[in-house]
Amino acid sequence: KKPNMNMNADGKSAEQIRKTAEDFEAVFLTQMVEQMFDQLPTDGLFGGGHGEKVYRSMLAQEYGKVMASNGGVGIADEVQREMLKLQEARS
Image (cartoon, rainbow, N blue to C red; front, side):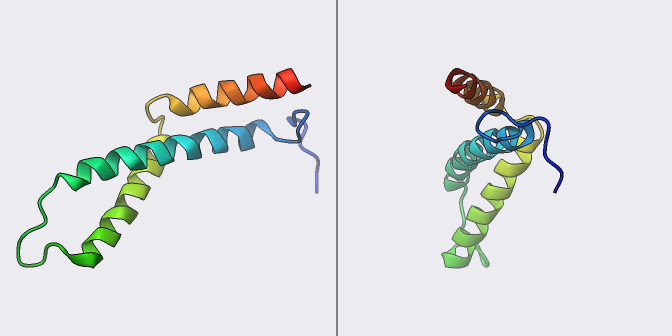
């Protein structure tokens, strides 16, 4: 395996740090989307039930991941900056 020249002192590459920051933002956005989904009515012939809860949860997760990977709301950028600062301070 070829060593990554972009490694920092802790052995984390810039790509790994960015992915971690985006994952963090995706979790935040998922929570936000789930709160929005809670307000939607589920009545009707095929609405409600345990299946819908599971489906909505999975859909909210995917929305969160997609939003974070497409720029999100800027949380990943801040998290990435802070992670890099902390790792630089440790060096």
